Length: 326
Ligand code: PBG
Image (cartoon, rainbow, N blue to C red; front, side, top):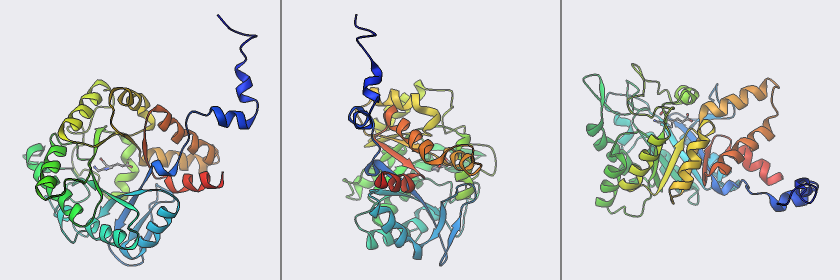
């Protein structure tokens, strides 16, 4: 057995060039996805209070934002929409002239190289704020599937390069795959929000997307934070339904789930560094209690080290800037 004093682990930490040589995890903007919130109106660049640095953007300001994202080397945006009106069946989600469909057209016209990923869910578009159709006071799984499939198809027809179903309905990936295939959209990949937990870390997003449920909560469809084995079953089932990329969400408090998914499945794995995780860093940094740049880099590095290939993060733009400057 070799040990001290023959082995000195600090040798590899003495000089920065050596540290760089033996570094196991390197962040790259090419693995980032940047979420954007799109809204109606003109000249709107309204700050989202709990998410400093994030905005509601109107369509006319979208091209400039898309250019910035692409110039930073970030390959994709994930679009969320704030519709003009909400109703019980979330009509705005699958309206061919809906906010996401219009936003997609703008980006694909102005910055074709930037990939558009559309979030497929109803919660931003329903007046009750749930992710599906309500029947007798409950979210009805099977009725919802048709609406999600319709939403995905309308997004793809508007030019979306990928769809990401996040409603946590059983069978949603399959329903979307079948609908896309039937419409000759066989090459559009699906990124399934496979293991999506019922998390308090979504709080700021719900403020941003105005999607807080008006009654009850999402625990009948999103996962119990206490469960890891169940996450593996969720991922397995998304893969069986035809998902091309699978996701764990949130990220920071679920690194064990990311690691296990990485070891178990040979599929590209995304992790969603969600709004509450972002807000906590921003708030503590604003108070002067943590050093924002190194703590953000440390967190994203940890998410990648845990096993994520793809990181969806509101930090994506600033981190891409920091990485560029070195
Ligand atoms: C839509 C959706 C949510 C998020 C992404 N897609 C909210 C929710 O499920 O309540 C959360 C993203 C974030 O917190 O950053 N269902």
